[in-house]
Every structure is written in C-alpha cells, then in structure tokens.
Amino acid sequence: MIAQELRGRLRRPVASAPQAEPRAQGRFRLPRPRPRLLLALVAALVILAGAWLWFRDSSLVGVKRVTVSGLSGPDAGRIRDALTTAARNMTTLHVHMDQLHTAVTPYPAVKRLQVSTHFPHGMTIRVVEQVPVAALTFDGRRVAVASDGTLLHDLVTVASLPVIPVSALPGGSQVSDPNALDAVRLLASAPYPMLARVSLVSTAAAHGLVAQLRAGPSIFFGDTRDLVLKWTAAAAVLADPGSAGAAYIDVTDPRRPAAGAGSAAPGAGSPASAQTPAAASSGASGASGSTTAPTGG
Image (cartoon, rainbow, N blue to C red):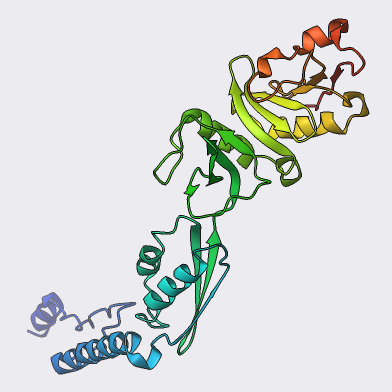
C-alpha cells in the first residue's frame, strides 16, 4: 500500500509557478490631453494671432515720419511726395513694397527702393536712381538713356554724355533699336575713366561698334562679345607711348589689339575709312606707326 501510494504521488504533475508578464521596455505613455485643454490652447492661439494682426496694422505703429533720400533731377519733388503719401498708409510693422513701387511707376528714373523702418512711427526710403550712360540724338533733340536701356525722358541730358545717333527717338520707356541697344551695352561696360572720354558711339559695316574718343582715336569693338576685355585692351593700348597720335585702336580681337593711323581719323559717319592693322603694320602707318599690345588673354 505504501509503495503504491508513493508511486502515485511521483506520477502526479507538479504545478508550475505562475510567471510574471514581461514589462514593456522603453515605453512611456503620455497622459491623454483633455478635450477642454486642447480647446483652450487653440482659442488662446487664435486670440494671440488676431491681436498681432490688429496691432501690426493699427495706428499705434502707423508711419508718421517719412525720410526720402537719393533723389535728384526735376522730378525729385513729385517722387518724394508720391512715396511719402504711400508710406503714410502703412505701418512700421507692415510695409507694402508693391504700393511703393506703384507710386514711382510713372518715373523711370527710379531704379529701385531701399526701405527701413524705425519703430514705432519712422520710415526711411532710399531711392536708387538710374544713371544715364549716353544720350540718344535725332534732329537736334536728345534723350538720356540708362545702362539697362531705360529711357529717361524727364532727365535733363548732360552735355558730357556720349552721343548715340538714331534714326528716330523712341517714344516708349525702353530702347528697342538693336544697334542703339548694342551701343548702350558698350558704354555700360566701360570703366568710368574711359566712359568720360567717349564723345560718340556709332555702328559701321566694316568695324561694327565704333567709339570716338574726345580729342583722341576711334576704337573699333566689332560686336558686343567680351566688352570688358575689349575696354581693358583699349586702355592698355592708349597707355602705350607707341600708340601716341594713332587714328584708331582695333580691339575686335582683344587678345591682339592694334593701333594705327589712316588717311583720316575715322569719325562717326565713316569709320570704315581707317586702315586695318595689317595695312598699318606694312608701312602705311606714317609718323604715328602701328602698335600691337598683347593683353595676355
């Protein structure tokens, strides 16, 4: 009996101890926000945004003092008044650049505007004006033109500006004639010391763009490629004592500039009458001779 009871006990399965569930590692649950709290936050943001928009456009920061600088010429007063009127409809926290640009649209002399504000009521507007580089001429009349081809009809032309003859003065706001545009590009790329020496720019079939210097030679540029390099080459030839008395300087190839003398100095109407560098170097240069000045390009 005892032996049978012991065998029965040994055959009974032993109940396993309950195992604890593994804890989730790295998990941190945020408490769910209450709907009322969310609504309160949204309402606060809406109120703050509305208050900012109201304050930004309110008279508390309205523009009252306007300073306009950089103006010259006959339209300076009208431009200043137009900008001042437009600015006083704004605030120092909300500047409408489109309205300022619209105010000066009738005045092509204005190139761009630079605006700064001074909280709470001040605004400074600096006007950057178009700088004329030449005067288009036709039938005794002149119209100044800026470096980008903008016509400055209301600007009093300066007598020292280089002249660009045209078949008719344009009536719009931009130069449209291709030859005149090329002449403007030529002058716009000139260093200021050289620009001050140019009296006239024309186009000739044999030499392309031709710039006539005051009391100096003509400069043959050809087309509008490498204009900066061509001006540099022309300045180098002019600085060479060997080019003294030359009737022309040819920088059509700026890497091989040349100076020479012709039977007559090539003027605005007949630049093709000058000798070519090849003719000058073959002995036809006379007293002035022919000079080539490589620029190392």
